[in-house]
Every structure is written in C-alpha cells, then in structure tokens.
Image 1: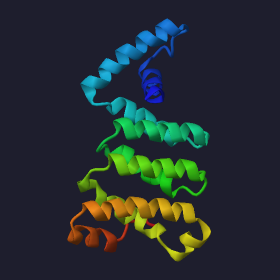
Image 2 (image 1 turned 90 degrees about the vertical axis):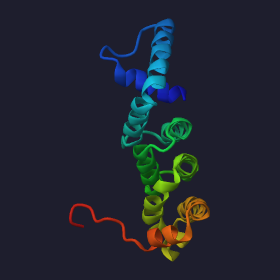
Image 3 (image 1 turned 60 degrees about the vertical axis):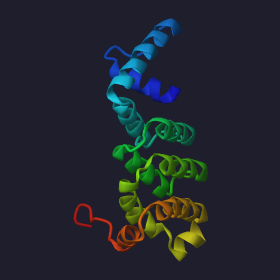
Length: 168
C-alpha cells in the first residue's frame, strides 16, 4: 500500500516529491483522502503504469501486484495487468505467482470469463514441460474461476478464442 501511495503521490504532483519526510507525510495524508474520494483509481493507474515499465525490477513488480491486491478489487485495468504479468516468460516465478495470487483476490465473477479465455492457453503440455510454475499459476486462477462461475459460462469461456490483436 505504501508503494501505491508513493506512486500516486509522485504521479499527482507537478513539482515532484517533497524534500523532507514531513512534507512527504503531508502529501501522503492528502493523497490518502483523495483515494477515499475517487475509489483508488489514480493509484491503480499508477501501479498499472509502473508494472508495465520494462526496466522495472521483479521485487518492485511484486510489491505493485501486492498493492493491487489490496486496492484493485474489480478494476479491469488491474486485472489485465496481472494477467499480463502471469503470462510474461521474462519474469521470475515469484513475481508471476504473486500476480496470480493478487488476481484471484480482485477479480469479480463477471470478469472471470475473460481471464479464463486468456489463461487457458497456458495449460498446454508444452507449458507444463517447459514452464511448470506458469502452468501451475494459471491452473490455480482458472480453478478458482471454475469454482465460482456457473458451468455453462465457464464452458463458453473455455471454448472461446482470444481476440486477435493487430491482424495477428
């Protein structure tokens, strides 16, 4: 949560972060009350943007995923960012595992079909053999969806093709 607060404070300030701890604390307090008013949207946007930065280290990505778990309930952008983290083969297992854990916590039942449609392709024999941890993370998220969704909705999501992007 502190990372989310820091990101939101930094993103919302035209003049950057303050020089003193007292100044930073004051900005944190102000930003916290803004969160209460706008439902954390600004902090979530900052975390999603942070997660997407290629030069970001794995520890910071994990902390951002933890923060999304705390404040991102039902937020589609947060869910999309976490799904992307799970599927990213360049990330370490701990980061992808944290993303899966956070995703399980924040997705709502009506968002589960799209998550199943994207993650089901990672449940292949090839992924099982070459990247078992990603297979396992996807399996856990899909299992949670299967337990929560009505069977006909899960069946439809499982058999639906992921939307093609940019003519691929």
